[in-house]
Image (cartoon, rainbow, N blue to C red; front, side, top):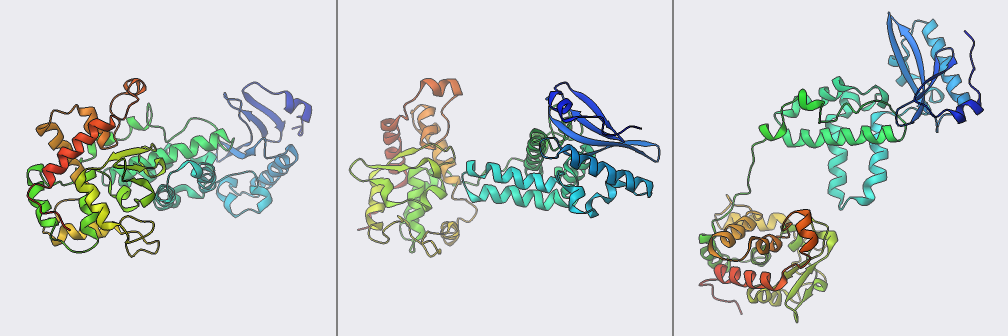
Amino acid sequence: MPIEKLTTRQLARISTPGKYGDGGGLYLQVTKKLVKSWVFRFALNGVEHYMGLGPFHAVHIREAREKARKVRTMLTQGVDPLQARETQDPVFLQGNKTFDDCVAEYIESHKAGWKNSKHLAQWKNSLLTYVSPCFGKRDVREIDTALVLQALTPIWETKTETAARLRERIARTLSFAATRGYREGDNPARWAGHLQELLPRPSRLKKVRHHPAIPYWEIAGFFRRLAEEKGCGAPALAFTILTAARTSEVLLARWTEMDFASRLWTVPAERMKSAREHRVPLSEAALAILRRQAGLHPVWVFPGKKSDGTLNASILRDTLGRMNRGEATVHGFRSSFRVWAAERTTYPKEVAELALAHKAGTQTEEAYQRSDLLEQRRDLLRDWALCCMEGVNPRP
């Protein structure tokens, strides 16, 4: 069989999907999306195989021919090149990417757009724990449905939320690899029209767990007891409840974000779940807490003993525990606020949703409703503070 049939001029002109033979089992493969890569065709034990030798843009034809020569030598020695690939020399492996390689590249190219290190750690840890043992060292071209299911099936029903996120991360990694030319074909981790036929829908398996909350009609009594609590956790917890804020927003609150004259706390976009700046109107009760905190730390409103000077979230949970309300969660107070707003006030629901920094409607409605309804939210949080502080003697 003649080999080295393709010339550099011919390679440059190829722009139609298909397989173009160079001879000796080496082909230039062009996908429907015009992604080019080198593959080696061979038969072993009566079964035809296509072995990826690297993307066209990264592997010169001379390198592809050398890799093909090595594979032919292995075959004459009775060695399965797919199984032996991981033990071959670096020249043979050049241009091929394992799944773990692609994960590392994906994270590196996307980490600047992720809001915090926690998201980065979740990506790494979930794939390292559940995927790497299954096919992390396999060439990304070899990843198929069976391998994806091997990683997902053991945890699909027992750790459904983790498994669903894992599937999406596998799919994104494989899509990234295809775009880079490291693999071809359909994405075996895609849900629609594929894995949805093989796995039960996560929403049918996942048991929704709401954050346990103290009923709003018990809030006033809770605040009366909270006013007697000592320690740095009590004022932070009270401020969190009065502002209907998320715990992380309060724990990292800075004095530079507080405007006493305007009675306003402005949380910057980088600290918001929505990645949008959030203005929080401050009730008199919330302002009173800030005045008592003044002078404790030059940067942090609620300082603690962590290495960076901030307060640990466990302090707030410990405060609940000392008050014998350990069944509740700090986040649950946002639910208490929302139910109170719905059942005991006449404020429009979008005002309450904006107070929680939630979206207040559809994308179209948001396009037209560009106001954050600050003054209406100011009235709402004032009334919420009156509900919370009923019968509480203000501290000096």
